Image 1 (cartoon, rainbow, N blue to C red):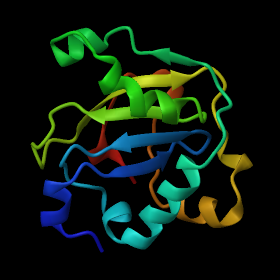
Image 2: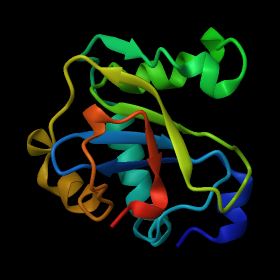
Image 3: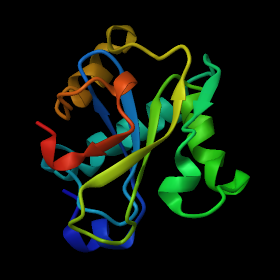
Image 4: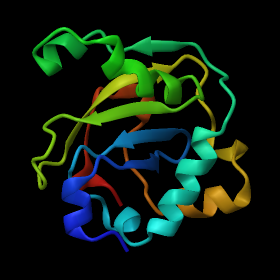
Length: 149
């Protein structure tokens, strides 16, 4: 279990699926969905798996990013999102960091060749399907995580 204190004080990697593709999420000190907060062990299994995947995709940076963040986006800010997107994941950041209960995330980068849920090994699939988003990741610019199953 990931305590609320831990969630508030850390920028944790977590993952979700839209039943076809995978989203990489950076929590920015925000409240995690119950399916993620319920098991630090499962979260860590997914982090280790996805961070060790090979790069398979070119990426597209969200053209609205400067407007969303209210300033020019630095290479340092993009670095981790680019890394994860090259692995075929849609990468999102918390729009209002350290506002614990604010559920808004925005797309940082999307893959041109997304990793498909059906290509995951069974042990990873069994964990990630616990955190499902009802809209298609390839069609959205933002996520309200209060809508997560």
